[in-house]
Image 1 (spheres, protein in one colour):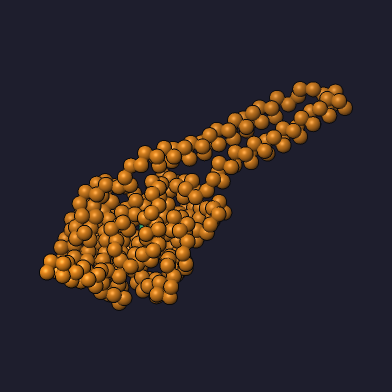
Image 2 (image 1 turned 30 degrees about the horizontal axis):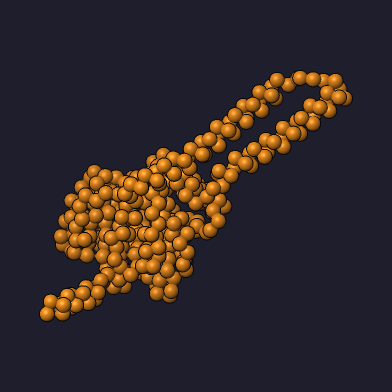
Length: 324
Ligand code: UDP
Ligand code: MG
């Protein structure tokens, strides 16, 4: 009897298991939550009834958490993980993906910059057999020139620095098959640059393009400092080129100094001219000193990350879960 009972509930569970999980990181998005849930529900119900929306509250200080709890009481497909403090966008997404049980997982920003309606296109591609469908930003609305410029330069630079392809102009808005999610979750690194990690795992990947809307409420959570840190994370996680620059600079300096030696020697022999040019000497010393300091800085970036990795702290800490 008991066994039979277990059996039934197990298969029942399977039948109700979500096909689609949506993961949305939330940091102070109180004004966006209600419209987001509405639009998500509408967009996803076109595809399936078996879905879950997992909100990861990343240490919000506005009313976001209370709102999320309220909506999770009304619909048990709305699930909430509340982190013990602000762990950052990338970690919040990882937390959500760990709890997601769907056959496909969609990661979406909570500020409505990523249109939920695009999920239908993603699902279509997924059903065609693609395991990763990422959203490509064709137009970026409401973002200032500086952000667009730095983003364009950075993504192209990163592409040059890495040995595998990280698609340009994509964010974390994407659909991933269960197999990809498992592969992603098997990567233990602390320094998480998700779009790079998902490219790294391989599988069949494709993009669907959309026009990025301006933020609907509030301002961006990313300051210049956060953006620089994020960019450094992307580069140091996926490329050793900056470290190799040391050899390159050394090589160039070597050649220059060799040429200068020849010049000094020849001018000594033919013009009997010795030791002039204190200025050029100083310039060289300062230049080489600068290059050395820069390269020590680069070493520091990698070394610091090594320390963080080897501490093996948990990625995040959960304070509370609802409907999970
Ligand atoms: N976010 C987060 N933790 C943070 C910063 C942002 O969970 O420390 C969430 C935020 O609520 C939003 C998404 O990550 O849903 C993207 O953040 P934002 O819109 O500030 O980034 P931008 O669109 O400016 O790149
Ligand atoms: Mg945004």
